[in-house]
Length: 108
Image (tube, rainbow, N blue to C red):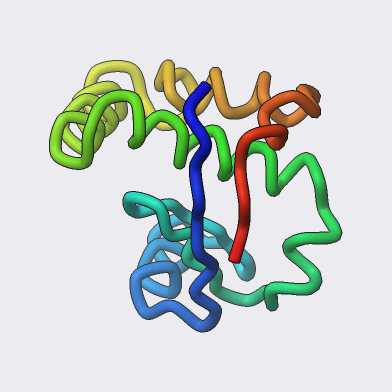
């Protein structure tokens, strides 16, 4: 896997909108190489390794497919099979238990 640098954006408006839609007090979501947070700060997020691995998996997915193709495929999967059965979410949940996902990633 190619080295990836990702960023964290706290108090993200996009994440706040997603949190309302998902009816969740806390959310992390990825757009490109940025992990957007709502209801959780950077320190709390980084302490939850399974959550970090999940979101980093999405960063890697963006990296592999490209920005627009990833968004297109992700949204199509959600429409076709729903959020939880979406293949990108299934892969990210599997990555939660895989420490190797973080080996070539820097979070700044």
